[in-house]
Image: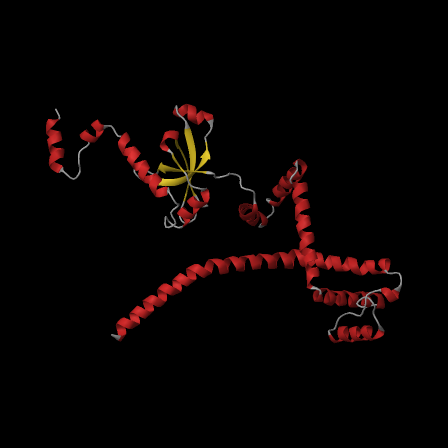
Length: 308
């Protein structure tokens, strides 16, 4: 009795644990990835830009405020601060500085502390980074910019170690952030990889005209995504009449593929049933009569006896 209840509890615990993991893990991973991306941009791009901004602010103070009494408190340095800074540098065994350089170091740390108190100032670095990315895209997106980019990439691709890493990093970045090269708008069914097996695919267009001339009929190219990773799959070219377009959106088709058929788009069942009925009606009656019934071996034997 106790063993049965224990097994039931463990099975229920395992079931609900995996169910909770399935529900929460995608959201948690998404938040973690976005947070790590923000930290990377903030630490490696925004903070250096903020450091440059602070240097510009320090050097522009004498030009903005000619009167020393009107300058901010963090800019003014007194003798006590200089003495404390010298003692700190002596204790840390740092080299001795002249008064001018010592004042600049004190102002730099004072401005950093004041900057952190006003947290919204850290957004300046992110804003400047966004503007720089935009300008870089505008400049490098032109004809001369693309030529310059290709030339630099050719040089980088010849460097040792760098050439083993850069191409793959570029592919990942272009996949995540690049503009889509193909717009998947039409969804269709096709018998693939053999007759009787229907596969869901995205109609990407028509192949080159020489292909269609060689085939003697209109062809269509489809991308058959793999499940549950639709970013990989197969590209096939089939006759136009062998493709059955479905009245569903690409998003519904992606969900159907990723879920392994669990998330079925509305109406696809009715369309598939109609398709099977239509294909069955298209089979000639003579073919139906001449085709042997695998469930009736006697019938098959009689047909063989009638043959000359």
